[in-house]
Image (cartoon, rainbow, N blue to C red; front, side, top):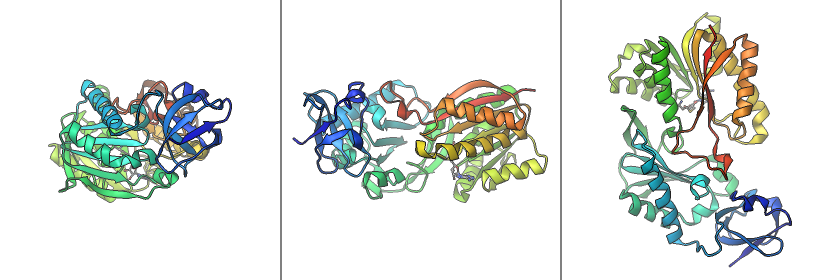
Length: 394
Ligand code: SAH
């Protein structure tokens, strides 16, 4: 068994069960991509079993802190069973469910989403890449499903020295399907949709938005970065009279429009705008438009902490514009899914936007990813999605 020796003092995070070991913490040792290594302290004490990623600054991701644990197919079977059993206990109101959320489920780099009767998976690190076949077999055995589609096309794979790979890993057939979320029918395509097909992480916030639109009687709603219109359906379900979905993806907007009809809402109540959100918000302001509720759910402006400053300006800008566009008493659901921007920083950014807009607002609720995207005590990095539900002071 190959081993990795850490520099003195660099064992601290592992002793706190944080699974990442950075390149700079390593004194000596190496292995091939994805190989299991014994990670030891400077005095050769056992710390963890991990998978090595020679191309990545996150050089090792720990599988286990138990010296007696063997890292074999049975290990992956057991971890997958645990993750999937947990979802069974979470009472998720959808048949679109994240079954495995990487590090938070003890499987660094692995994402498994269930969409109806198929699985969409992403191998995001050299360790899980090496165990791809046993993982695919175990997933079929545990879930009883026969179709697994691979979406290993996240840009972060490049940092791991891995090539993009997409296609059927098990089974075949049509890649488009429909799921039912909160009773709404949502079409998606695991081959062409964003991420593994859909933004499952916003499930709870979509329901919350429907409830608040109803509670506050919001009539005119603007859903920015709408993708296929999940929040737009929520607004319509909440009784909004007119909902506008804004996105820069024409296919996503076409699907949003189809979703409106598919779910029995009057198509006249929904409009789509194919535009850059920032520009569209400015146009709305120039035209003197006002809304009762706005959603801002932009893509990751800061994939890493290094881009946080530039991203902060971009977040502040759209939030300032949105706050200006809301009527007094209006509702803003605003999000960041940038790992580099924590909840506290996001709060500060939006507060700055409020000052610039000359608007104060109540925080009705802090928003986060749905519970099938868990954050663990040991691994706060999985807490990437943060948001605020704000009510503009009348
Ligand atoms: N709210 C959605 C998910 C949004 S994901 C849901 O609940 O499903 C972010 C979306 O922003 C993507 O659909 C992407 O096409 C869109 N997007 C990215 N940059 C954009 C820009 N500058 N202007 C408008 N839309 C943009």
